[in-house]
Amino acid sequence: MPKLDLGLPSYDSLFSTEEERQEANTEKVMTIPINKIKDFEGHPFHVTMDEDMAKLIDSIKENDMLMPALVRPKPDGTYEMISGHRRKFAMSQLGRTEMNVIIRDLDDDQATILMVDSNIQRENIYPSERGYAYKMRLEAMKHQGKRIEEIPDDELGVEYKKTTCGQVGHKSIDILADNVGESRKQIQRFIRLTYLVEPLQEMVDGRNENEIKIAFNPAVELSYLTESEQFDLVNAIIENQRTPSLAQCQEFKRLSHDGELTADFIEDTLSEEKPNQREKLSFQMKEIDKYFPKDYTPGKKKDLMIHLLENWAKKKSREQER
Image: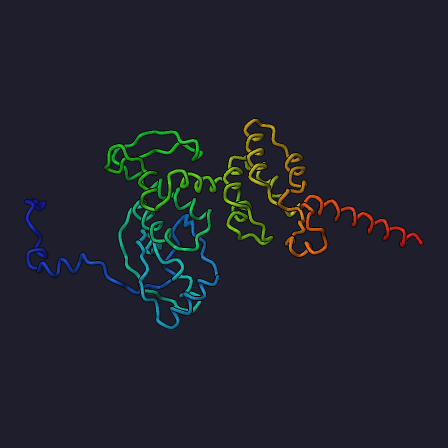
């Protein structure tokens, strides 16, 4: 005979104290094997052996891991890292096989927002990392929204759904801007970096093996080029060991939009010497003033120096002909 559910409390709940029930719901620090912790899927932040990592390893070696990592359980019995990727790497470098964690049940959007928020305030974050983090967080905020509007945004390169997140009239990108202390425009510009091919992202971040660096503003303009155009540019940059100026990047963007940007034009542009890359000779005027009459203007001094150098060059040429 089937049991009739009268909606009454269970036997266990009747005979357990409130303290025991609170204890069961309280998050605890647990020790679990490191090999059971997987990195967050699509984690945008690079974990590298740099100076900061060396300091973290030394700190853990001396004081142990003071703050537990945050993970969420997965159906297959493993855990996904939310906050603590660098600590996990440091522990592994020290040969540790277990680490302290807090296990928390989170859905995908909650996990993404927590993962981004726990990393975005770090001092040393690459520009492309910030772009991917902002993009992921906006998507998660969009999914959590209670009312969704379709608002095209050319700067993002895609059509984002802006959500009120319970506040009518507020867009998710505006809320994110307030949270991270950036302007709406700057967040959009960081997200544009996610449309660069990997070699260009490495150049923006300054983490490429050729030690070639592209400035942020030119990189944003280059993000509007097609993938094949961007690879043509990568080849030209490496071949000439020179990066395009902001004006050149804007010209590339315009030609790409019109379907007129070619690999030859990119190569020709990069092979030209930019004004700021030409060698310059500079010195203080007081170093040479003593060699000129006091009434000589800077223009007269320049003319005289060129005249003297021309005579010197002619003299050297005659000496070589003898």
